[in-house]
Structure formats: structure tokens, C-alpha cells
Length: 191
Image 1 (cartoon, rainbow, N blue to C red):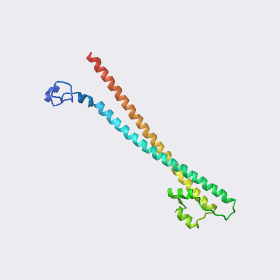
Image 2 (cartoon, helix red, strand yellow):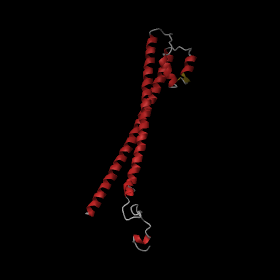
Image 3 (cartoon, rainbow, N blue to C red):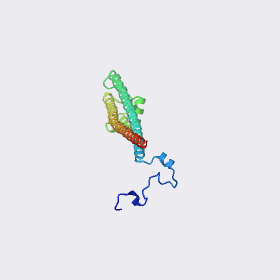
């Protein structure tokens, strides 16, 4: 091993093209592309797929929370209308929550003054006055704002994922350019 001659290694180092028993080129190995470039590109494509799946999942989550925020805001507006109607009926007037608001509060597990909506209604006899309706409205506004904040944070994370995805695309393009240059140089030297 004192020399720099590869033949001194006893033929232990062989490429996939040299592993063939015959004197012809192993086309299957050439098509598979077992080069460093192929492995690098394959790894980058796998990472792109992973980031693409993450972006799709994140987008679904953002859409769901944005819909929830919008629905909670709409329910808050309906409670606001009930408050306005109630103010025309006098100071001691009470009203039941509209069924769609009650259904939404159940689905969203809304808490008002630290209680679930059913417990809150039971505590106040099933009908709510102006102040109690305002507490329900505030709870709906809080739920809407929390969902909206969540959407904003997730959009930033989605943007980061997409930036990383774009970096991967650039890296693949760079590797392909290097591979093209290398092939061009090899072809020119063969002539």
C-alpha cells in the first residue's frame, strides 16, 4: 500500500459498472443512477414531498380555524342583535339564546365566566339579561380572536415551510446544473 496505485488494492474498489462479469456496460445500473448526484437529488425530492405534506396539513388546519373564527364572529354578531333587541324591552327583560348560537356554543365547548354554556344557562334560569348576554358575546369574541391568532401564527409557519421548499427546489436545480456541466465536459473530452 506504499504506492498511490489503485490496482494495489487488489481490485476491491469497483463501481456498479465494473461489477458486471461481462465486458459490457451494466445498463440497468446506469439507468438506476447510483451516483452521488442521483442520491442527492432523490434525498432532496423526498424532503420536498415531506414539506409538501406538512404544508397541506398546515393549510387544512388554517382553513378549519379560520372558518371557526368567522363562525364565532357571526354568532357574536347575533348575540349583539339580541342585546340590541333586549334593550328596547326594558331593564329587567330576559331572552333565551337562539338555537344556532346554543348549538355553536356546544360544538365549540364555549365557556362563559368559567362555566360551560349549559351550566351558565342553568345558573341564570335559562334566560339571560343584557349583562349576561354581553358575557356570552365576550366569550364568543374571545374564541374568535384566539382562533384568528392561531391562524396568523400558522400562516407564519406555513410561510417558513414554503421558503424551505423553495430552497430545496433551488438546490435540485443547482445539482442538475452541475450534473449537466459535468456531462458536457465529459462529452467534450471524449471527442
